[in-house]
Length: 182
Image (cartoon, rainbow, N blue to C red; front, side):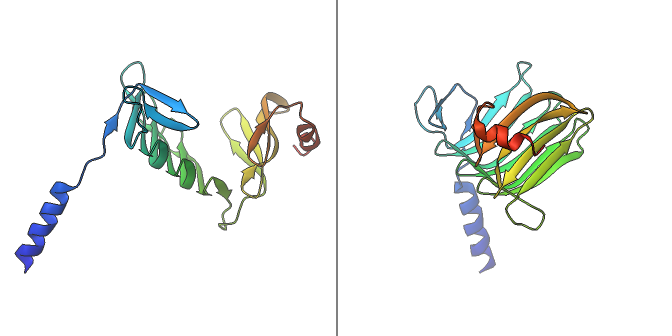
């Protein structure tokens, strides 16, 4: 009986199809990634490289959408980000690492919505502190909502505004209302 099970296992693993690996050129239409040469939505692993040839990113796709693990690398090969996607949206772990490989950001998402430490949808201010800058986002029900930006002390280097996860122009009245909450 054991030899039969081993034979079935070996046959099944030998017949398992390895995912196709793509390295471009690509075409993006309506949020879906296509192989530019075949015009087919990509299912498999997409590799992106720096001009030097070093691996920049490795992403799993299903029917043209990110689906599975996404990894980003620094030019020296050090892992800089590790995310999980389902049907094109963040779902599961989201991690970013500094240039020394130490964990900087660890978050969890449920179908594109940020979860707090209790597994509930995030509501409130989230700050990411770096060596020189602080990045701030406001969240409501797990989605970016309100005014945010990149700050150093009292100086604003870059600002942005969201409502229900959608980016708005900064002169939108909603942005002016939420700017005072910084």
